[in-house]
Length: 310
Image (cartoon, one colour):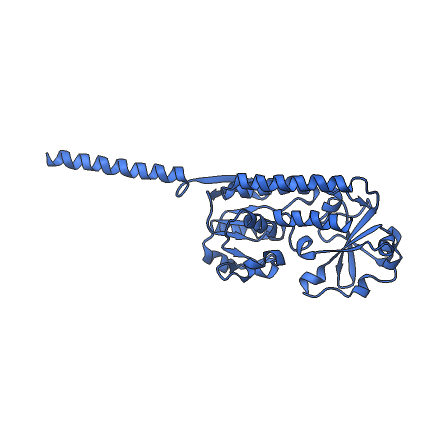
């Protein structure tokens, strides 16, 4: 009799244990995971990760919009519109966008790391610490990759519906902006200023969003597509003679001090139609240089161009 009771007790305990395991699997608290493919490989990520390290600023924007907390960010490279993460002591500083601090990342015991092109060469090392997913935007196909990345992040954190809703709002704003700019035949040149030197960016480039997505016509069709743009002279700008000259001042975010305006708006640049007609447009480098590719910056970029070209 005692033996029978003992056997029944064992069966009940096993049944309860099996039930608990099944429950954990179904509610995503223990064994659920998502397998995703990305530019650099494949990652198996625990469902609804709770310790996320983010190096891509656009991804940080998207997580912020979705209300998802993060464990660590590169605090030296945080734009003003995300300053709360820099000031939050509960969020660890995990290095810079160009130099991850592996010791600090390890200490966080993350369950997901999000990176983009600046961290591509560190992928193997980061992937040893935690599943690492590349979510950098494709400059040659900005909106498609932006949508894909946003939905992927939404899927990873269990916020797909919210991510789609945010994208729908961006699409509506973009459609309106494209309609407003459609009849504008003025031509634009986009330049990056860095300590008295200039680089130009055209279609398919880092700042090609202005041409490729918003439809602003380029003043130069054959610019070299490179990470650092095509190095140009003041004479090149004067000869191109753009109607709009979009200027992104790298000094303002890297050195913390805007470049000398008289150096930027020199005599040759003063010969352009852009200067004569008051269309030297200084874009916010916090958005265009430090960020981009996220929900917040994409929204802000559309607003900034529309406001400048009214």
